[in-house]
Image 1: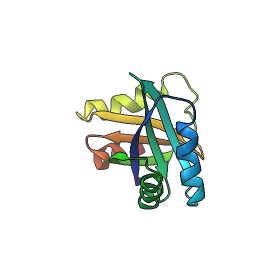
Image 2 (image 1 turned 135 degrees about the vertical axis):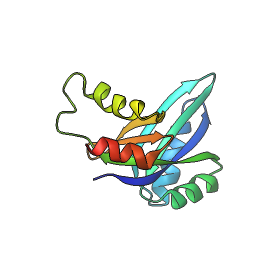
Image 3 (image 1 turned 60 degrees about the vertical axis):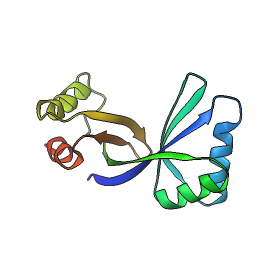
Length: 130
């Protein structure tokens, strides 16, 4: 079963301790991280973050001096049983591509779930259900 949630975008300086600062701020506020994608690019750490309460996460981060640079509505859903089969990603991505829907964000979350941002989440969710 898929649901709509909010992905937070944070950009941090690429140096030791910044992701620890982020985790400590969220932990101190009682906000659990249920999905995360982090990469470095040109001296910045780019972090996509999924929590159960995006508003509480935003308050905790901004209270710690960490700016939330963006929010994106995303689909969060259980991965299919055949997810470890070669070609599954291609099949799933082709369904939305053939409908003219662009995938803008994808990562894994706790509980064997996928996080997906698209140009049309409602239609993508329908297509991915089968």
